[in-house]
Image (tube, rainbow, N blue to C red):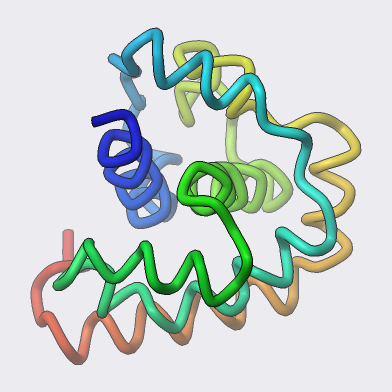
Length: 151
């Protein structure tokens, strides 16, 4: 149950990132999920590299959420780490791109999902590659599922 909640949370955060600047995010994350996230170490370069590899697979993940297990395993990630990366990296990307933390609903998110200064610096150092991967994933998603990304 916790793994599915983490995965769904990660997908929701990953694909709502472009609209965060206009909408406040509310968090109703169960305590068990919060505790699981708190046990995760901070983002590192390996996580950023994994996220860049995960992004092209987002269309498949949305149509077949069970494939996340296989993708996580292929990247030597636990499902929890996979979900943590997919949730936290887009948030850090939005913050490093100048999004207002209040508009992102940062105060309503668990501390474990709030990027530290070191994590923000890491994302900023990799922002060009991350944005390219996100744009490619969004383009593939738009082609595969027209109307899904339209607001």
